[in-house]
Amino acid sequence: MYLESTSSDRSVGKRALAGKGGGLPEDSANSVRDSQLLGTYGRMLDRSRGGSMPENARLQLNGNTYELPVTVGTEGEHAVDISKLRDESGYITLDDGYSNTGSCKSTITFIDGERGILRYRGIPIEQLAEKSTFLETAWLLIYGELPTPQQLECWSALFTQYEMIHEGLYHHFDGFPAYGHPMAILSAMINADSCYEPEMIEVESPATFQRAAARLMSKIRTIAAAAYKTSIGQPIVYPKPHLDYCSNFLHMMFSIPFRDFEPDPDQVAALQLILILHADHEQNCSTSTVRMVASSGANLYASCAAGVCALWGPLHGGANAAVIEMLQRLHDNKVDLKGYIARVKEKDSKERLMGFGHRVYKNYDPRAKIIKEVADKVVGNLKRADPLLEIAKKLEDVALSDPYFVERKLYPNVDFYSGITLRAMGLPVNMFPVMFAMGRLPGWIANWKEVREVKSHLYRPRQVYIGKNARDYTPLEERRTELVSAVPELKDPVSEYSALS
Ligand code: ACO
Image (tube, rainbow, N blue to C red; front, side):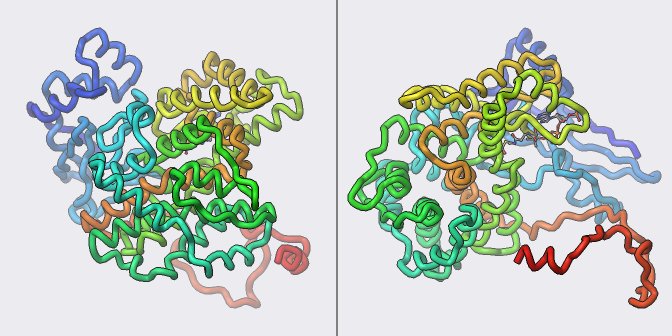
């Protein structure tokens, strides 16, 4: 098999690569530096700056040549389009974990992981973090443009209109045990909520979609706070219409009857920032899940509930909680940090330095830079210093000067400091992924809408089967243990199962 590409001058690519608004630097000194920094990817971009851009790729396979068109995105990203490959050749491509696979074309979020760039609808995350609000950013993600003052006012009014959850839904909380994980409760309640307004499921007009989007975003914070109150045995607190999105959430989390919680403005600002930073991140695990579910025609609620489940895993939305658990362990056991770093580097180590590394960013996560300053401020406002922040800073210093992390381009990701900030606000660790879900919801909604609008195909990847070849069914009496040895033997499965149930 052989893959080559043909070339031609493509001014559209050159224009995109010239890098307006935070794109690529143009002078050659920077170009050389970038190229060294970015390795193969940088060299490819440099070549394309020279004017010759690949037009088609040619795949040679078993004596046949297949022309594969090259697609170029508006930021100069190149993709070999293999959508007709199986029809024409009978072959599929194999990309375990999808690191080299573009699953869709999207206009929502741009990430350049090598350069640490993140933009929502073209606007750099740094500008949104400084100037925008979560509701405004959500509108931008969902509709593609910043809202006009009137649109923002209506959008905000919808959030107030939908902030309560149906009284019937409150009874569901009684059915969960106090130790139920809030992520399990959140995904269940998002689906349950859809039963109370069935017309929101069909989303037949732009107006219904807008209401459904605002309704879901507004109610998720009421559900999240109610899940927390249930878990600590306190009465559920109702939302207050005059409060902004984040203050209202903190009120429902921390007010108790006859004693209203007055949130610190720095904490409100920090929470808003965390939500903005998490609002979208192109085709990450949970967003791809939302798109996958949406592609079957599933409604907004079902698709976003699936997103919550995908986000729950420790390698994705559970990482901020895992960071705190790691820091707490290091603190409680007075672990030597250099020794710990040595341990995570071992080839067969089961431990990883949580909050470090990213599938896409091979440079400092731009969100981590922003959140680090906020963590310092919120923690600085606490009456006492947080020893975990000190450990986090030391760990970062040790790791960033260690060739293992430098060579593998493992930098702190957004979770490294967001956990510390949420902890300083008094949020319990099991609520951290819930905060992530609240933040990511606009991104999920925007992606759900995009799947609907482009009338996407049903997402249905293929596989390379490596299991047993065709064989006959063995009757029960002929089966022997050595033939089914792949199944682990439990000592006393019946009592083990009954102990679990
Ligand atoms: N600590 C120690 N070593 C690491 C770490 C880490 N956190 N992350 C990656 N590595 C090492 C791997 O052992 C591997 O080493 P090798 O080349 O010697 O085998 C190399 O770096 C590449 O690792 P991969 O797992 O192939 O990288 P991948 O891109 O698949 O993983 C991931 C990304 C899952 C985020 C990983 O870096 C990780 O587990 N980090 C810790 C968990 C975490 O913080 N997750 C949050 C992600 S951000 C988010 O979802 C918001």
